[in-house]
Image (cartoon, rainbow, N blue to C red):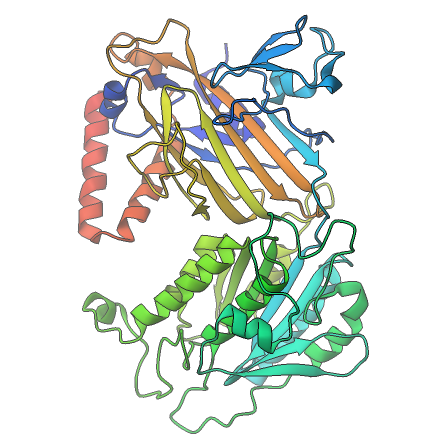
Length: 560
């Protein structure tokens, strides 16, 4: 028999899942005494070359409150062509396409080795990848030149049908019209006044307003080709023109007097980028890539004034609640981040400067949307150039290592409830029988939206054992969890990856040694660290440290 260490490694390689406990305490009381919560680290798009996707729709449980996907843990009656859901025990009829199945002719999703399986589904039109560059022009000449060259290089790495757009900003914001006619046109916005999404769309002449539509569908009927606005055009059409336009970009022309900072309208530039994508491709995967070389100094989102004699807020200022612009700026970026996340749009921030650039206020943009956050000294360093190039890296199968507009749905057997998740996601507020009232992280839901995913994106999912102490689980009983990730693949296909896992229950009073032997201390350390960091966002630092210390002491005492 394999050791627990080998079991943990095999499960991580096959399913991208690591649990804190790999044998589960069988009652709420026993689970509480174990100190470390029952939780797992989930890598939804764990890279596997031996996992070819199947080209058909998954079979779902017919119970409306369940809708779990057919998996190897389900009981199957091959004669009657029925299967029993292992989560709610509902008996379901197989669809007609499964008429030929038998013990020796099983579909992939019933084979034990396919505890993780990926489906390609044909739903609606395929939407190309969308990249919107938001470029700071208040840079030193050398820095701006290096950034322009990196952006020109990135065009050659994008798929030919990818849509790309360009916004530049300094004191004013310019939204560039991209056409193949060779005439440069741009819409200019003041950097001092915030605009609503509707105002931005009206000013840019976007024909239709941003309205909530079915996820993944751009604003057109299925038989139409994908629309692209004047501001977002396919790379193969405008790569030469955009390369020239980037090459001709000049530093912000507004003079900067001695003792002053350049006026940089980062907050409004980002607001216009979010509004533009809301109006053209709502509920569709897209990347806003912000390149900035200094702090926002003007308009909503500013973090410091333009007077150099006034330094940017320090840690002591924040601690003493003396950071003048911080709360308003953070609020501005949080609103933008939530708007972008609600539409499945991801925000990357590349901040390269010797001074601070306001990342503390802007961090929610990357955190809530799953974007990259890169900090460097200059755009003219190999650190930035190589990092930016890695964003467009391809996997062993020759496809981009990125996915868009994902949602994660978690289903559990009756003895478990979902307490919450910590990671680059937002709640979809999906209540249900498997949702716990006790929240850990982003809780109160069994579904989360993840705007951007790559093969290393990992979420922490926390559970609660709800089985009562006086209701023993039968000997040999197993608890199960299913993770259903729907996403837009970099090839523009809609895909669904389903991972279903099961673990044994054990009585902590008579089988404590089994539970302890199956403890994954590496996973537990990461899960507790994530909880600590999450709590530190809203609680005092010393309180969180004391809580962590107490948890460690209790764990050592409980396990001897």
